[in-house]
Structure formats: structure tokens, C-alpha cells
Length: 137
Image (spheres, rainbow, N blue to C red):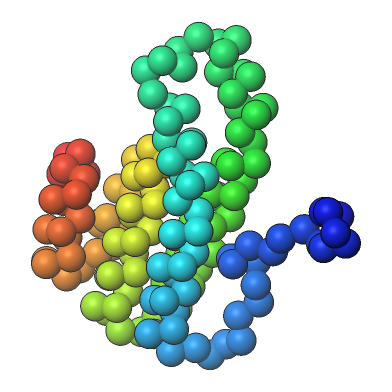
């Protein structure tokens, strides 16, 4: 319970979705999820930098940022589940590119590469490669 009798804030990806929703609504939901979780993803990505090679320091940071990690993972999982149910290929590719950007902010290259391979539209692939050239490998 938080101050002033308010319950704990509910995240956008925890809200129930009344299926079926259209592709436009699904793409908008994915965009909102990715933008809401971007702050946690950026904090996770900053932890993966070269300065965190010390084991003791890393353990302290892991404990401190466990909430951010859980938040990012739940958001990415929900966004991927919504994207899988989209029927329009171009809309799905645009939504997946949003998820790839979220993964790259979190320095989650493994997931980003898997999702990048799922993008079929050449223009969207080139746009993502322009933002994240490391995915070219």
C-alpha cells in the first residue's frame, strides 16, 4: 500500500486485454509498453557496461536493480505475446522493431537478434539496422 491510501501502481503490461483487438490497437499497446519500460531497460543496459566486471559490485547492483530486470522482462514478454497475434505483416514488423529497440536499450542482444530476424519488411529492417548496426552480424 502506498501513501494516501492508494494501491500500488499497476503497469500497462499487467492490464487485461479484451481480445480480439485490432492490429492498430495492438501496435499502439506495444508502443506504450515499450516506452513505459524503457527507463528500466536503460538502467539494466547501463549495468552491463564494462565498469561492472567486479563480482562484488555486480552482486550489489543485481540486488538493487532486480525490480528493473523483472519489469523489463515482463514488459518484453507481454509485448511479444501481443505481436504474435497480429495479422498484418507490416504492422507486426513495426511493432517488433519497437520491441527490438527495448531489448537493445537493455543490452539484451540475444533476444534482439531473434526478434530482428522475424522482421520481414526490408524498409523496417534497414531502419532498425541504421539504429543498431550491431544486429548486422
